[in-house]
Length: 189
Image 1 (spheres, rainbow, N blue to C red):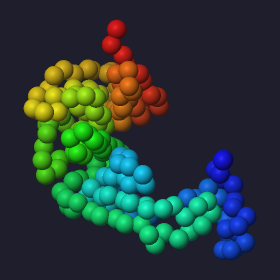
Image 2: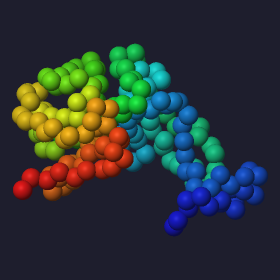
Image 3: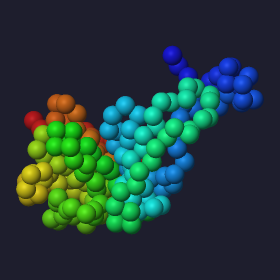
């Protein structure tokens, strides 16, 4: 069913407004710099306003057009120990096999830091952790077990442009160049 930007007549009759495709929300993450889906309606965020990593459990959504958010649960971790840098996303990646959350920032446990000036995007593929560096346009590959840098790629993206990254099932990297307004795909030959 397509619900985007369409009002819900039942909600409109009950509440006086239908709120369109609004399914659920929690209002406590201004300046959110990154997000990772955990399971069901559970997400982790890099909360730039509070300097924390926050876990949002939306529980059951309230259906299109309604506005009861009372069942949502928010838990904050490492409060004050992560830092937002304006205009630089701080992505998160979940390693389900190891039950570990990776964050592109300085946290309680540093897995990798070698050669990184301004980490922004982060992606996991097998035992390799890819991290983008917003300061120099470089993507570094690290061994997630040892933290050792395996290799790097100079993307040619100017300083301030390299942001998010992901890896598809075929091992191709996709990353964001915010300065050039584009998404770039890199694949091994």
